[in-house]
Image 1: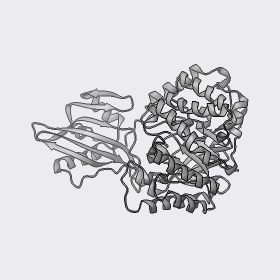
Image 2: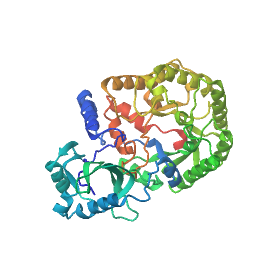
Image 3: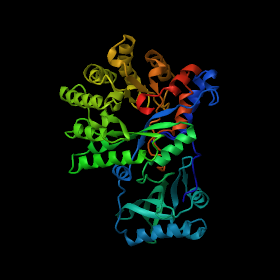
Amino acid sequence: MYKNTIGKLLVHFGEEYSAKCVLGVATMLIAILPLCALSQTSGEIPAPVVDYHIHIQSLKMSRWLTPEQPTVDKLPEEFERLLRDKEKYGAKVKNVPALTDLYTKDALVLESGNPVWRHGSSAIDYVFYGTSIARLVPTGYEMNGSLGYITGYETDFSTPPKPVSSFIYTLRKEADGKWRISTESFTQNGHIVPIEHTPDSIVAELDAGGIQKAAALSVAFVFGSEDKPTAPGEYENVKGENDWVAKSVARFPDRLVGSCSFNPLKDYALEELDRCSKLPQIKGLKFHFADSGVDLRKPEHVEKVRRVFQAANKARLAIVVHLATRQSPSNPDLSRQQASAFLNGILEVAPDITVEIAHMSGDSYYPLSSDAGMEVFANAISAGDKRTKNLYFQAVTQERLDEAAITRLVKRMRQIGMNRLLNASDRTNASDPKGGKNPAPGDNWKLFLLLPLTKEEFKTVAGNVLPHMR
């Protein structure tokens, strides 16, 4: 496999952010936070009792979420020979003359570890000393006169083979009739492969972070996503995923508490809620308004969601809701309207259960739009609005926060009260090649400790335990 690697980060950030960006954010946080916050240690402040937001998913769901890789039935003979020669001569023990002959003299090779482009003899030196090849699997190609390309991915020799990088070779047919690589670029990691996020891996990460329990949230709502057309068997898939979650958390009854999920706008919503309420391992529900296309500016959406929340209240199922829509993270007015509609049209029918707003009314960071939504709730709480009696907020992870965002986040936290804030990592699949979308539970708490809060405020958040998690 390619030998260049980026040093492992303590905290894994979204795929779209480079290591340089991550280091920049960490440097920024250290620069702007007071020394008292940086001096906090795990010995002074206990680990949180609960992580309120960890996704758990079956292999079937993982396959549904994972983009399928294209395939090539058969490459042209010349292209096939080039790939096999690249494997043969570019392995750990290299045939230098034969490998050199696979490249044009003016070849360009991207050194992905830096990354910089190398040219000519420097490019060949990098191929010699900086890479080694295992198996190359093509995913696409084009042959057009004397020009062409091959795309694909590299695997190791394990069973089944594990993708370790992706590549693109642009090719040129030279005067001697041989196709050679004129440009080469590759990634540091292979594509994500479908894999379960098992209860075992969740509990292992809880143990590593010193956290006692977690809310294991189903992602069955994805089967009813507005981004995908309704297909036969949708509800069966939703039921199957929720049942898998219930069965999985039952293996760790003292560590994991299960929640079902589904699209609250669907015709089967109330039926699935009633069915889930009879599963002894299920204590709550997870709704994702953005993925489900819920827009509370639409009266028909308010009515459907209202019925679901009313039924959840009757069944005494706690609720976690991702309130933001697809558009609201970039639109403070829309975020404010969504929050107001939720407060005035939905929350009143669920007075007897806890309702948690994920990501502080936004997504996994805290832009102005999130604060606009939080302002609605904070003002209602400050005014003693009875509808907010059992309303809680999952604290956001600390990626992509600048000084202004930190300032408004802390101000809003203190306005609503630390007793309403819940530790939540939003952890996805810990076993995928990227290490999951968000930090592991323990790493997420370390990031939270960087906020300029007092020791007593941290202890309050760490100790918040809702009734369904006891």
